[in-house]
Amino acid sequence: MKSAVIVFPGSNCDRDLAVAFEAATGAKPAMIWHRETELPGDLDLIGVPGGFSYGDYLRSGAMAARSPVMQAVAKAAERGAYVLGICNGFQVLTESGLLPGALLRNAGGHFVCRDVALTVENAQSAFTSRYGAGEAISFPVAHHDGNYFADAQTLDRLEGEGRVALRYAESVNGSARNIAGILNEAGNVLGMMPHPERVIEAAHGSTDGRRLFDGLVEGLMARA
Amino acid sequence: MKARIFVTLKGGVLDPQGKAIHHALEGLGFGGVNDVRAGKLIELELAEGTSDEDIDAMCRKLLANTVIENYRIEKVA
Image (tube, rainbow over all chains, first blue to last red; front, side, top):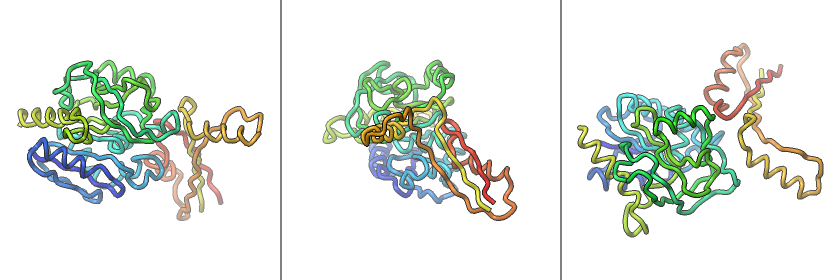
């Protein structure tokens, strides 16, 4: 079970995500700098962390999505590695085309930094197997650009294919259909704005996020 | 040669920045502003002979996100 966390200039949740990966896998993830053109060939899990990569220049995630390492991440996803993009990582995944749609400035114009109520919409995915369908959970969010946008046809398709993994259970940022996290078609890439890695220990006030990592790793181990 | 790239949000896409600017203009007492949409202007200094296709590719691959934005290229002699 090998994991890695991609690190861009301006990433600031990379170490939190590494702690979460290590807690679930029992081994330290490789920390991969954005200039790398290749990843270790046997990675099972890749994290694209939150933060403000490249200072959010041009658009959030736009520069990171074109950095050399993201070509390698796309190739790894293509061969079946699991990719988890959180917050800025979600923005990077939409900008790089690994997930559909885009993340716009929050509808209210404000940076939102608080715990939000979420509903697990799809509990069958590799990322959500330890949650119940429709289960109410709470993760922190901390973002300015989390307002998910896609055309109506794309939204209908995401809903129809069970690719809306998580939905906000309250008004947060104006996201289309309250979408908080989506899966790619193959189900091995998840992008989400909320931060599960910030709620993995009792000292964090909640362990709701721990099950995401444990369930994912358990599934990957069983597959190996 | 120079090119100016105007990047604007597509019609149906909400523009909180434009709304905030609109609100601030009203706060300054300017009536009669019906709507505000904010965009970006990107100026490129290009080698002579850079093809239109290349400029267009720059827009599609990086400068604009065509899921949410339109772009217009204006070449300046």
